[in-house]
Image (cartoon, rainbow, N blue to C red):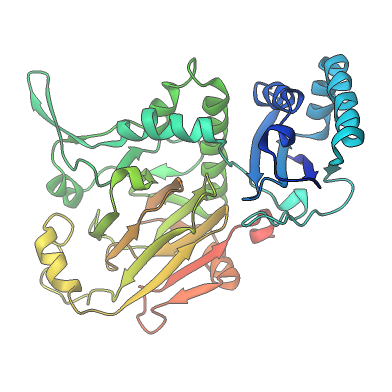
Length: 382
């Protein structure tokens, strides 16, 4: 585990609200120095509505990484901080610099209660990279149907961004089953790794960030599962439409749990809203057809009870029977990435650990179709 190190820069303006004063050019230059550094995992920005208070939270790969950056930029950084002191005297503006070694910082802004650095998985995107992600990576998630002779057709435009998850760990991908072949015979998709690769030169900071995130998430999954029938990456954002419609995915005849890691990349909204409907009966005659025949599924969920889950944490783990449980997601202005492993075989005691840490548990009365959910911490399997 990387022992991340963070710095919080606070700016408090005790005069009249003034966006120009609170962001002098030296502060913007500091931001530029930080943003272009390979030593940084993430920068999180917040500004109060009245422009009196702002906050940056800068996550470094380690304290050593910070020290390298400081040595390389010491002269200009000293000039910038001296200007901050002048502003403090002239404009009565307070500049604070806090680090994870000083104390645990409690932010005045929403969604930013900063725990001890050892419990952090922080992949928050700054506005520029959020915009780049939505415009350039999200569209590559459209499933394509290949008609032959270089003719491709979008299979489900505007509803979901779905990518293949390449294997980067010991997690075995089983050969595709007859059930999956019949459901989606000719649909093609990029891997998420391929989609991220398109940003290597246009947005290298984002490329490094998402590549490392994807390796880290598979490493987390590797702690829990041995194999799966299918591995995919789903992305949710309102650019795709109002919601991901209700669906259930039965990818093989052998029915097991789906293991999902949900990562929240931005904090501009209230959190993605997921619905989970009453699971199918194992004796349901339509069970083989719900995956590919949406009319059947819509008829099934009509007037059915459902449980609702709003995902707000930075990183969460969700385990449920996706083949038997119809589910949907209502998008908002935040970007979520879901690393999804279907029909998994759990490692010894892993499912028991998941049950033990679960903060939310639905469908407990339906054996084999229970749902478990918890905010992820590195210590979850210790």
